[in-house]
Image (cartoon, helix red, strand yellow):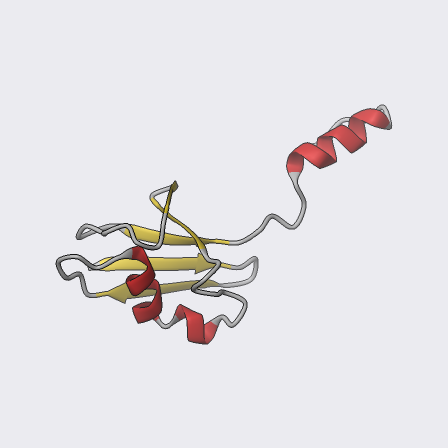
Length: 93
């Protein structure tokens, strides 16, 4: 099995896809149904990774892989840090 995951701030989408010899990241994404449930995800532009390492859509997957679909950051932490530093403030935890 291959696990395909896509996380939103309020919800996670997790789908199990049957592994077969030669299945690619793009094929697993299409088979997961996430493209249907999450219209903001596009197969052509999806940024994906396996266990945190970026992969291309044509990468062959192995049994047990976790294919992660990444979304753009809503607020880049480096930009925020620079803006706060310019104001003489720091990030609070």
